[in-house]
Length: 290
Image: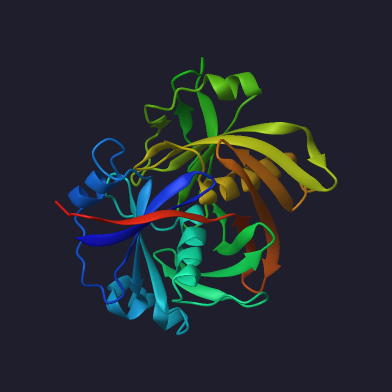
């Protein structure tokens, strides 16, 4: 039997498994069964809580930041390995705090190792904020076809530690008409795939110096989810890019599961993007690994 906890960030839900010493070897098939919403616990992915010193990718994180004691081993619902998860890392941090494995005082920072590098988590008014680090235009700007859209739309490639393609839509009606039960088609296809976000600007776009948009997402290796933290950040970055140099650096992004905040800010190595929002633990239990 393996102990687990179920948690979510704005409806993006995860199975959290504590494995501090890295003794548990989860196969892709086991992850897929656990995340199955009919035959398993049900989740968008798995967060394995492991000490950085106990996993190869984590030891690389320690070389970058010796204080990054914990590593977020994140798996998508289909069992594939992902670089980063913006909602997941807030849930991961909340689990560490609630379990007594880490402390985040107001004003202090908790570094967490991920396959996208070390990410710093702090407290925020809405729960937790994570510095997602440097971002960039990836140069991958495929055409996007999705069920429910009458014509192919251009996408903007954004990298925030994992790959995204953001697509602008004209109205809430178009956003509602999307059928994301099937993964959108990218032309040309990207070798590693990408999360695909569909965004509609608020009316007005900017209120009191804060940008407002609405978004739906198809996550790589998962399908449509109620929220995607890194996708929210990519969406805000894309809309700011399209809006021009006078666009704000603070954004509120509405997703089906709630609202998340995004902030762009200057750092020594370039512009970073931060994501803030809630994290909740729902229930705990034990499960047999098949």
